Amino acid sequence: MIKTMSRPNFSDSFGGTYVLMEPDVFLMGDLIGDGLEREKPVHEVEISRPFFIGERPVTQAHWSSVMGENPSKFTEGWSSGLQPVERISWNDAKNFIDRLNELHGDEVHLGLTGIWRLPTESEWEFVARSGTQSKWFFGNRDSELGDYGWHGGNSGASTKVVGQKKATPWGIMDLYGNVSEWCQDNYSKDYSNHSSSQDAYNVDSEDLFVHRGGSWFTESDSTRSSARNKSVSTRKSDGIGMRLVWEPTGE
Image 1 (cartoon, rainbow, N blue to C red):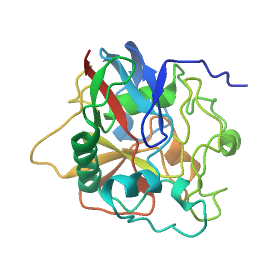
Image 2 (cartoon, rainbow, N blue to C red; image 1 turned 90 degrees about the horizontal axis):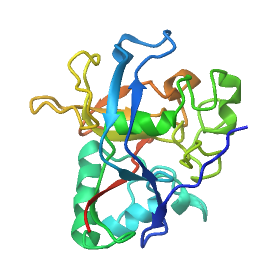
Image 3 (cartoon, helix red, strand yellow; image 1 turned 45 degrees about the vertical axis):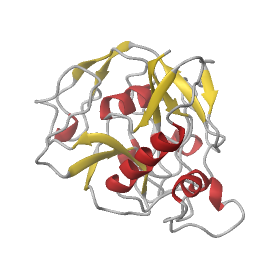
């Protein structure tokens, strides 16, 4: 049984909860040895700055409240507002965050000011692993994945209301499946040129960006903690959404 540890958190004005991730060091990449080349080499990453990450992905209701429209495919039913927003490009996600910071950037949480942003790729994997070194935070058996995420084998061919599956040991939900989640980083063919910091890997001339976690239509292998995917910044897919990070910047 996965035990969830209580961590400092706060709620925003849209009803979302954001959980503190404290500085630490972890191993990133294909620790098991049966992943793809893009997940190598295994390397140590230092999370040097604390950040708060959304307990759940951004919902359709949250997106609509900020942007005034809903681009999602799966909008039928009374509960659709609680399903993750999808069919958003990386550029759309950036515009959403810019708008969010413009409207709510002066909010104070736990006595701190901060900014909203996407997680970096290393932050995303750090959270997905939640202190573990297995394929998924719950272990290495994909037969257990259905307890923790929505994927091609159990989703019924659509996204689902967020927060229905079991959380990581650090209290984060829906990291595996439902929607793949955009990260700040440009995609690279492997980690050979990456640094050991939590900062995003960005190359100005590149237009491929990372998204993580797999989705409602992918096979279990795509949901592993180390699995990586990529898309151009303009791609809109009903399997890609986003999750927010709030980074403290001062008191």
